[in-house]
Amino acid sequence: MGLVFFILILFIISIIFALTGTIKYKIEKLYISNCNKDRKLEKKFTSYLEFYLFSKVKILKIKINQDKLKNSKIKEKIKNINMEKFKQDKNIRKEGLKLIKKLNINLEKFKLKINIGTENVLISSFAVAIASTIIPLFLSKYVKKYSKENYYFNLKPIYAGENIIKMEFNGIVSVKMVHIIYIIYVYLKKTNKKGECKKDERTSNRRSYGYSYE
Image (cartoon, rainbow, N blue to C red; front, side, top):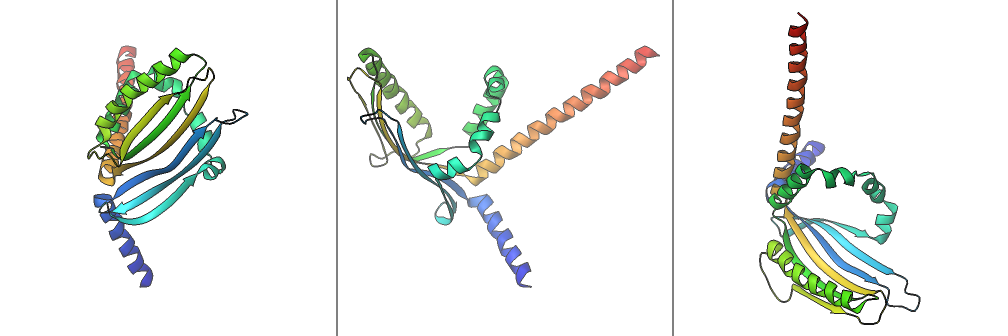
């Protein structure tokens, strides 16, 4: 009886989460720098994947840091992805962008500081100018409620005649579970349609061949 009750409660929570849930990915600390004597690249990374009911009640929190990423097989899976096919196939890119837009991503927090320098002073200035133009456009697409406390970026060129970078970032991205389920549904529907088309093509080819043989 206790097991049945537990399964029922879990089922109800799953339905509530599917209808009202929100997934948040929090990058608490992302630090990249080679501002040291040896110019060795230092990296520090700490983030959390959080699951909420009604966008407020936290039910699960998973820590993701450098050590976990090293021990996981994510890198191997990324290497196995055929990126050349993605680059060449325009239809895949278009469908991917459409699906991302339908996710209705909300950027709840974005704090970025970058100091960058290259061997060429003009390239350093040019890189900062381009980034300063692109970032506001990016923020305008994914920020729903703007506030100075949660959104800012500071980009500065370093005129030292060598390749130097110092970056600090923390941010929060959230997606509602309803949108994720909808995207999965659309994707499965499209793949099923493609499969049906291929089957129809095969059967039609066989029939035409049969009639010509007679």
